[in-house]
Length: 217
Image (tube, rainbow, N blue to C red; front, side, top):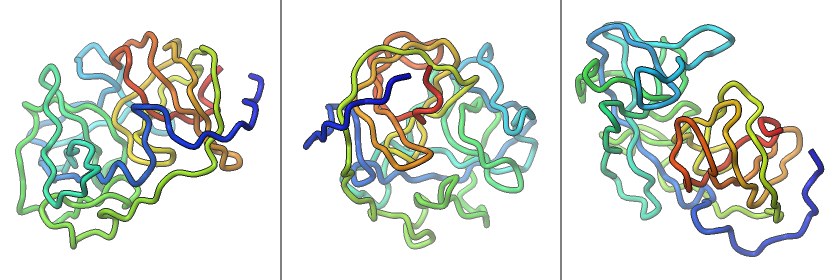
């Protein structure tokens, strides 16, 4: 893939965000039965993998259910609504700290959980009490973004679609999904491309976010 010409852009395209416009929270929910974590809100969606092993939850394991994107830095942002009976979040330790969609009917709210939900990389915050984590409202504006263009497809089996580069994931793209490049944030070996979804199996058309540049053909 030819590298994008390094033309600096002063403003991110609409629908793409830097870390200062995300500030997501999580709330601990408890699994009531064993179910797999999926790349889409459907029982037909592939199961998320970690090191080629399928990821899921078992009874008693906790799942951090994600809030809406929270650019105003509310201490208690609303939870994301379920889609087709599935909710997005991440599996808390001792399970794999992978994000994805889990069947809501296999979960129960557990606000008394001892496990703190600070996000998969510990950079978000627990919706029960922002003081439990250090990632609340600390994002910085994104700089060093270059313009990019052209359509391409996803070459990876599955890749997070993120609200900000290196930041919080909110959906998946899978191999063969088509996107339009909008801009690129270069940060060495793991740089990110801001994309607009053109045609995807498990993400709506028109959704915008950031993916690892290496995941694109």
